[in-house]
Length: 130
Image (cartoon, rainbow, N blue to C red; front, side, top):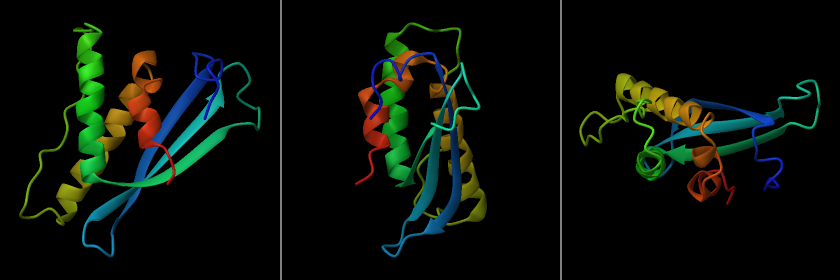
């Protein structure tokens, strides 16, 4: 993983959630890409790119964990992004999948600007490649 120096404000973080697809076990997975580049030297080719595949329940857990961290920061002026509600029927509907994808991406983009979130062990665990 990144050193403490690399984890600081000198880096810009970009997240995308794309390519929702049905997993052989019957749930939907989303491709999550994290790009981390130097703010001081954006042309530097030493960017870090991490790609993982995650399901809705992984994002739901991350949302809960990051919400708790954010709440403890007492940053009441920032609206923590809401997350798509869990549903049993219709979870494979295109509009439901897109809403979940967008909520997941919004959550990650929000975390990219708050050091306590982007440096959290919860986010680090989320991006661990098994």
